[in-house]
Image (cartoon, rainbow, N blue to C red):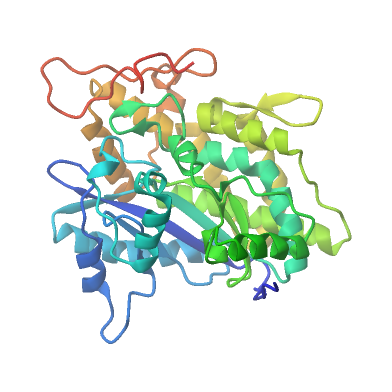
Amino acid sequence: MQIPFTASERSSLGVEWELQLVDRATRELSAGAIEILEELRPEGAHEHPKAKHELLQSTIEIITGVCTTVAEAKDDLAGTLAEVVAAAERRDLGVLCAGTHPFTDWQTQAISPKERYLQLVERMQWLARRLQIFGVHVHVGVRSPDKAIPVVNALCQYLPHLLALSASSPFWVGCDTGLASCRTKVFEGMPTAGLPYQLSGWDEFETYMETLISTHAIDSVREVWWDIRPHPNFGTVELRMCDGLPTLDEVGAVAALSQCLVEQFDSQLDRGYTLPTPPSWVLRENKWRAARYGLDADIVVDEKGTVRPVRQAITDLVEDLEPTARRLGCEKELADVDRVLAVGASYQRQRAVAAAHGGNLRAVVDSLMTELRDGLPADGPATHPTEAAPGPGSGSRAAGPASGSADPQPGPTCGGGHAA
């Protein structure tokens, strides 16, 4: 089986951002995508070119065109976001983004009436029905399939950096999971999701896909939901590990990291270097650590078991990528990584809001809507460490219910015990 690869301009960029629609009165996820997308659909067009359905009717995905710079991608997203927000407001709906909604029960959500999604739910059942999760995907162009697989393999080394930075899903159906990114673990339930296989080249990728399609495990390449994957139709490497990001500032930061890393690896291949392929056990362990502890994780940096704080690893990576960022014109967006480190990742900010409001998760929803509107806050739990969630080894409990309150409240933890 041959899979054509549509070559892209080197380091071209595309971003996908999955948005939540919430009822402004209840703060619950609320169906609205069908009506909003129909309103926004240009006359005579089948659909809006940059606003799409997703699995749930309470989700709208906005996408960029093919961009050259991160700034261009952010401007592209901002234009579509403004359209979606305005249409949502006319229906008394709010818009926000995070890896999960803090308290809505996935069993209440309606599936989008598209054949692809209906077939997915029929095939995967509970695994698909509970996918009340939201992410950001970054596509970076590469010029040939011969480069795509080595770049995917090498990028896996930086999966914990991007996951820790973007982690925004500490809550699930009203309780604190004790994780920085519970979205990661929910999505891993799908049979073709998770870490990519470390393949030797494009020929082995084609063999893998032929096996899955011929055995009816999947219908197309689109159904392989690896954390990092080649996208043959777009001619890109797609980074899919990031939780949904509340602000355009954070979207730009992870897009800059992604674009710079792919560009650096592309340049090294041109110079005849062999890119690294990290051991699979290290990748699995580091992904778990980032999902559990976020920016407080210590990650494994070599086969000997050496560990270092992921926060420091991210800082060093930004410094290493600065020359590449200057060439690509994304110095400002790359510098926003340090802003996120300074105020705290979204999972830390959400927990701080919950604690400050007696465990009221409606306040978390309000804070996420505010951040989408106003951008990354200037202050946060990372500047006040006592407000941040506990680090490794200390357990993680959300604030208990406020006395007499009927608002959505997180219990001590999912399952009622320590999540140490």
